[in-house]
Image 1 (spheres, one colour):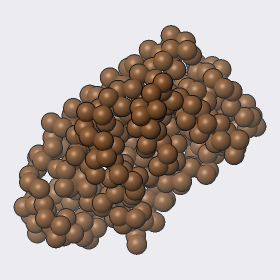
Image 2 (cartoon, helix red, strand yellow; image 1 turned 45 degrees about the horizontal axis):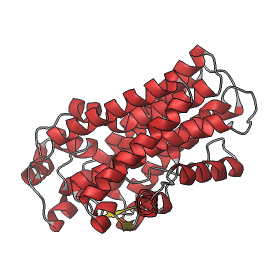
Image 3 (cartoon, rainbow, N blue to C red; image 1 turned 180 degrees about the vertical axis):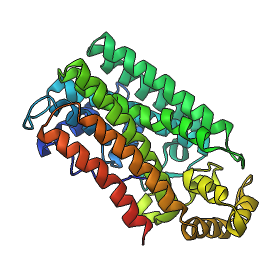
Image 4 (spheres, rainbow, N blue to C red; image 1 turned 60 degrees about the horizontal axis):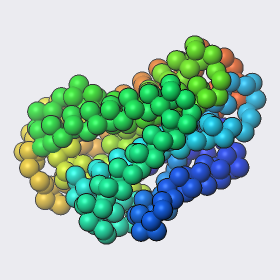
Amino acid sequence: MATAGPLTSLPVTADDLTRVEAALRAAVEADDPFLTEVVSHLLAAGGKRGRPLMAVAAAACGTPSFTPASEAVVMGGVSVELVHLGSLYHDDVMDEATTRRTVESVNARWGNLTAILAGDFLLARASEIAASLGTEVAALLARTITRLCEGQVLELQSTFDAGRTEAAYLRSIDGKTAALFATSARIGALVGGLDRDGVEALTEFGHGYGLAFQIVDDVLDLSATDEQLGKPAGHDLVEGVYTLPVLRCVAAGGEAAATVVGVLGRVPTPDEVTTVRQLVRDTGSLDSALDTAAAYVDGACAALDRVGPSEAVDALAAHARHLVDSGRSVAAT
């Protein structure tokens, strides 16, 4: 997955960032050095840590001015990030991916069996951490893993399906991406001690943000460079995953849509990927998808109004709007 925007606008301190990173590295330490190397591989490759930082930011919404996160909040966010990492290990096996975050994928380096087992280890470690935070957090993370699997299955069912609908696309990203961000925000709010109304509002924010995040990510796959993405651009098309901008282009009809439809349903050539990317841009389908992302952000920010004024609330809203702005900036180049 591409990185959909910087997280510097989130209300977190450098110390919180350091603590999240240290906790992640400690969480993937295994008794066996080889297993530690494998499960640390993508962690060492970097990442913006959007999910744990979302938890930290959500917890900060409980006070008028920003305060550093508790250890429990940090660990709650770490549990969700480990689920995300585990899913990437499994995704790369299914996609037969060779790179991830500009480095060799785990499956390409050590084989599919090792990658699957390492992904399982990360999911198990995430569950272990969640259990230490109480039954509500443990149950929440378990449900989130279920939704993640359901979203992935929905995507697999529509692979190379030229008739994929927007509704099917949205159901898939709801489970694959939005559920993780919603859970991050909810765990942060729960462990951070917000009242029930605040917990529900932040969960709604995380969900809307997550939908927008994935749409922006899909726009970037069709508009950014290989270097910006850390993987080959147009990868979704090659894998037969038809995202919102492509679906909007097809729905618009006309000559461009006919050309795009002629490419769908099979593995495209590099030249065909280039053609589809250009047609999606030329028909305004990137902008159309980003408008939808902006609408989800509007809804997410409206949910924050129920939390009450605070520095963290303002920063979360600003960050969500920056997400879409950053997508527009890349798509316009």
